[in-house]
Amino acid sequence: MRRSSRCLSLMLVVLSVLALSGSWVRITAGDVVGGVAFQPEYWAGAGSNEAVLVVDFKATGGRSYTFGYRWDGPATGYDMIAAVAAAGDLDFAADYWPGLGYAVDNITYRAEAGDVGLYWAYWLGTGDGGQVAWLEAATGMSGRTLASGDFDGWYNGFDNTRPRLPEPATALLLGAACVLLRRRTRRS
Image (cartoon, rainbow, N blue to C red; front, side):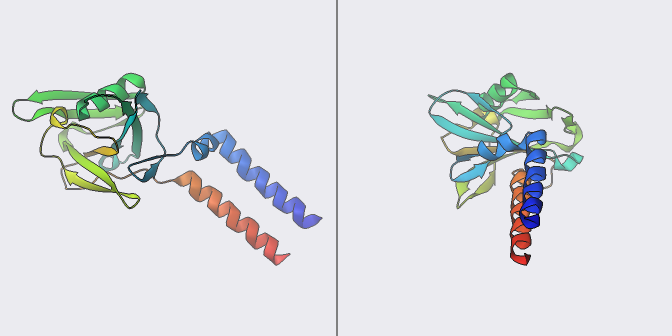
């Protein structure tokens, strides 16, 4: 009886932490685009096509965030970031460069802000075996035509660093709790 009360107590603690952090919703709401699993901050737009926007603040000591975008008909990288900005807390500033198109000057998301002096590098990605295969963009985001399953990534730093998908911390926490429960069950 004592064993089962310990296991039950541990399970209740883990579930309470997940519920209070809002992570429980994220576990059940994970998505897959282009064969790559991710947990979006939120979705923007409507339609049968889906793409992912990745914004990485690592160079300024911040995190990486993903946003989903849905649409029908033709759409560009600019359309995606503008729709994501209109739907939530992401904000961006961009300038138009003749021959290149729109390029980002800066991006902010909640308390995170990029450094304008570091330049925002634009990356194009596709799903490849559960990971994103990134290539540096040869054009601005207004010249990039989206296809369903595409990833557009922004990294704040001019050092050839590819954008990172956010770590699935909630899944790691749940996995660790399951391992602990299993160990306790085996010892008893």
